[in-house]
Amino acid sequence: MDEALLRTLTPTVIGVLGRRGADFAAAEDAVQDALVEAVRVWPDDPPRDPKGWLVTVAWRKFLDATRADASRRQREERVEAEPEPGQGEEADDTLQLYFLCAHPSLTPASAVALTLRAVGGLTTRQIARAYLVPEATMAQRISRAKRTVTGARFTQAGDVGTVLRVLYLVFNEGYSGDVDLAAEAIRLTRQLAAKIDHDEVAGLLALMLLHHARRPARTDAEGRLVPLAEQDRSRWDTRLIAEGVDVLQAALARDRLGEFQAQAAIAALHADAQTAAETDWVQIVEWYDELVRLTDSPVARLNRAVAVGEADGPRAGLAALADLDPALPRYTAVAAYLRERDGDAATAARLYAEAARAAPSLPERDHLTRQAARLNARLRG
Image (cartoon, rainbow, N blue to C red; front, side, top):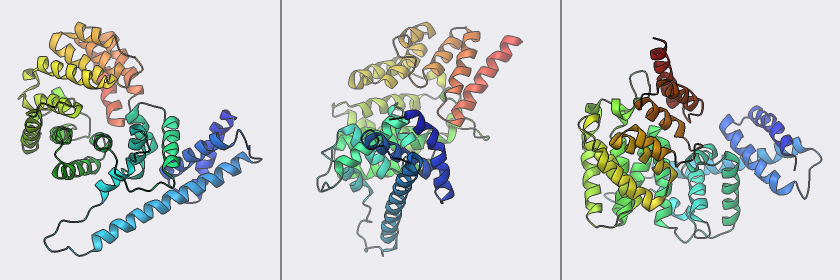
């Protein structure tokens, strides 16, 4: 398998699909699927014309995806066109599709990835970012999941925990970008909470409501990212906060703690503080300890280091950070923040600039760049 050849041909094949009418994102996804197929087929049956083979397979993948999207849109349009059945409940099969895609024959991770791609509408790149893996790795995982369920009967619903993970990742993607995507995740989680009595469903709903309540203050009039400590808290949605706290308290009262309840408790403590200075960082660290115990998540450990830095001082935060992998997304940004709080402006400026180059979104990159510029201006003055 000539991987260098594949890398060389990829832009060319994307361009061919673009000229045939595929938009860039759809062409990119189709080519990724074709590359996965090439990795599987070429070692035993190398093509005489690699470029022609990739174009043919990628175009077929694009047409398959286009037909699937068209079928889904037609199904949704038929549902919308149907007259309302009196006082009955409005039909919506989206949540059921989430459960069916969480197929018992798949591992939870594969089921989540497949559902995010097939029903949630996320791109392979977005899913890979959520899982902290390379895009090619995620493309292979999704393709394997598709092959696993090919021909399977989707008559057995999947696991609630898998569906919750999907909803959580859809919300996270929407929270940092598409408003409608976050709102859709909340809508589906509300539906799920109304159908089943489950502590973690309640925990996830509370978490979404508490985070979504802060959304109006997360950017300024120019669209620039505003850190939590600098947000205008009068712009937070107090109605959503009150609802989220009520849902969370009811779940915690059952004394069956899960990771989403722990995350919601942290969000509730932030929401309870009238100013950033009033934040109860000691309690937040305690909740992060619970979250790390439940998940052993590197992201939870990274966020815990920030909380420790606020509760016990930047040196303590840096000590907690030292135990983590520097390759972890946003590690460098956290290190920059703690270095600045510790008085090392020169190192902080360098780290902010380094973090900006690796930022996953344009607003985050711009924010980190401004932080580096601010410190450099201070050092020069």
